[in-house]
Length: 112
Length: 111
Image (cartoon, rainbow over all chains, first blue to last red; front, side, top):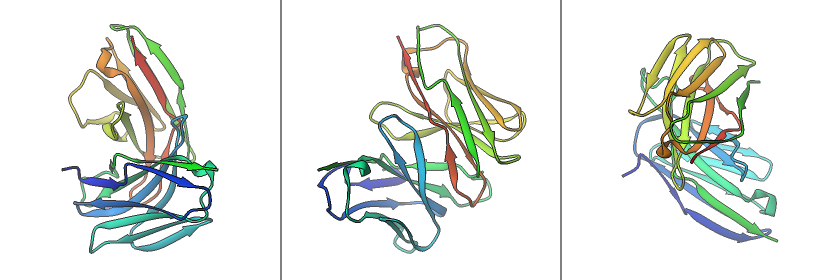
């Protein structure tokens, strides 16, 4: 079993729909990252969370440390949101050196 | 903020040829640097990390090596490429408890 599991693996939506991507992890973490990867391959960091909730524009990320679960929400989705969304956790512990463990990614396609 | 420059963006190399991918970082000092690989249909996997000049740790046994000759320079190398080395290689920078920053990646195809 992977340390970081994302669901769904693929997600198709119509423009304007509310989208949720889930991430569950099995290890102790110091932080959780949500990343966006566009078809060209480059990765952009969307959020880093250690507790609670963060919002940036139409994107909202939440984390429940007790349940070891995080969600990424996109409100009023748009075709330009089409990308791969990746959850990554930074392991807790003094020897982690900031290393990240990644989920498999969720491929989101938003149709006009 | 930190910026990572990684090149080249795309590379096609024959089996048995050498490899050198370079990554440089701006906007920070003494960062932790990482090389990740994403094989087709799989998630990103950590290959190497470095906490300082000349300090390299390998996460998985493989045909590749890494070096950090300067504080903000991280190089991924191979003496002889294998077909299985094909993939998407990503350089990253992160300080503990802060955001991670990524390069644009290099798509390597070994033919």
